[in-house]
Image 1: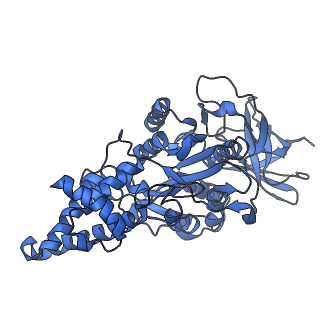
Image 2 (image 1 turned 90 degrees about the horizontal axis):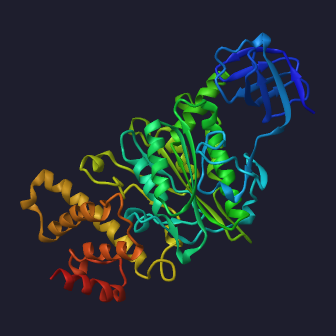
Length: 459
């Protein structure tokens, strides 16, 4: 039942306190009519006895509480979905932001999603090609996986996100789409993402929340984006890649609302339920038994002060299946994308590679390249102390491999879309720098097939 009240007794930031409320419910939508007749939307954050705390989706400054009315709508927030979402740009509240018409919804879905029984999940094991060698070759992305990118202020994570969104594809030409959600970004970043999405041939949906938009939209935006992704994946049988950037802005918005509610803060002032809240977003990725579609997530976050132990990357790492780490040191060398492969990890990479998925030699190349680059980095540090003259011939080869690995394998152009075959062939070219007896992590049959060929090409 819709009820209207004129009992708003207090305001703190985006929060209103309403007195003498009957039967209000958590997450219930409300409409606030201000003294000048403007309508603002919000939802119930807390209901206790005859009081309700309402979170307003817009700015509350200038509101005359005594002369404003609030209407409780008796329903939760829903988002209208249809295939017309593809190719469109929306704001943080799910309203069209481009010049296109309003969406004619096929259905209205609750933005909170539906709890998924773990028993209904299917194990992720199918390869997604991003065209980025450091991801495809060494930290493979698998359909249904959640693999975050840990970045830092000033690094090129926005360009990397746009490049992945433009290049990502699945084998066999199956139905594929990208849902891109940007939170708290600048106007220039928004224009960059919109222009990049106009170039892409992939079916895509873009959600944008600007830094000067209402803070509450940063909290609702990823849920609206994931609602659209769930519709496309599980009702339209698409394989959907969801890119969320920047989750740090989302967590800052959560902290701001928590402070307005005067909640007891946890680590670094973030709410104690930050882990639980992040899990309600990250766990909406996966595959469901009996469904053809899938949802794969790449959340992107900037680590405050480059600190990987900060609560946001720390808790994200517990929930997700690995991380791609961008390095300021590699960025300062002029290398794009500045991926540091040694601390990067995809826990499901072994499930998405190999014969019938990428190539039979992928696992061996991956392990050998990783080990050889790690050895080369150690030799580089040793050379700084003792000088290159103190190195053995084999050490010098490892040093050359490490240098060439960064210049040729890690570094690639913004428009360069490498196939997995090109990535693996490049891996063999680098491994051919080493003597054959150093390749201890690759089967002999693959060495005979690929190493000899690349060695001959070098000669």
